[in-house]
Image (cartoon, rainbow, N blue to C red; front, side):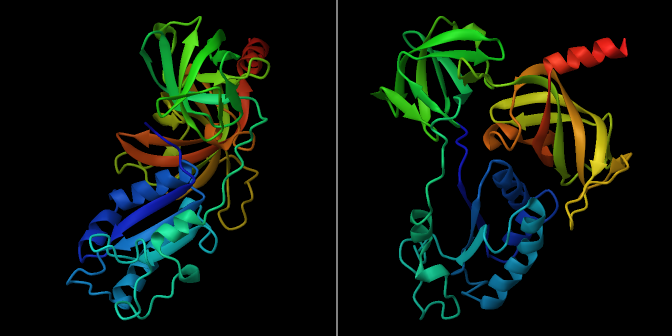
Length: 345
């Protein structure tokens, strides 16, 4: 089950050779850091592990070297290095700097944020505003039969109540909540941020797919096939090294995985100033930032990033590799799409 987290932990091996393998082009360290940002991680704790290894022996030089190599990449993913990233050395195997702060006799050069250990840092994080009064958005991750039709997912915003009536989007099926459970414990109400199991009436298992969104009946999740997004082109495949109109990939957004195509690039964004170019670029290469129109084959439920970040951010994957991360700026609703087609005809 894909729980979308607020705090991410990136565990790096300090052992000679292991950090290098994870960080080189296509390595897992890069992939995980990127995905964490896209999934909405607002704080990244970089745990530099295995500091007790004989090849490291709590060396400040090795620790600093790893940070120096990681920092530019994390910055390019969109992390603010002062506010969003905390580095810490540790030995998880021996429990050093995990629950209690590392002793100065072991690691004299490390001060750490406010004398906190790894667990202290996690415990000190403020709770997020889960918008309890916003229209309900519950992307469905899983569905099954269990004395009725059941779905599972995380409430991204709003509040859900037992007996409440909701719309299952994009198919606009009216459903009633029979029961709500958190960790197999039945509850009358569930709030944003909670992973829930929901038993539904008036719908069969066959009518539901992962990526459908249980929504407020008066303000349902938008349904689109086309949208404008800002995309950071991270690392294109070697044999598909140009990102342009016609590029195809798989769009991953909350529980959706859909084939998509780039319709056009609408502007290039200057990474230093954040300004959009007046001229539409023909293409960009790895490292470029663009705004573009993306089209999917099936109707999907998404939001703009500023309305609901959890339904407005996505990754583009190609042959299993993340080639882009993005946020949705503008939706072309199906009505808009039909109107533009008619005017074109």
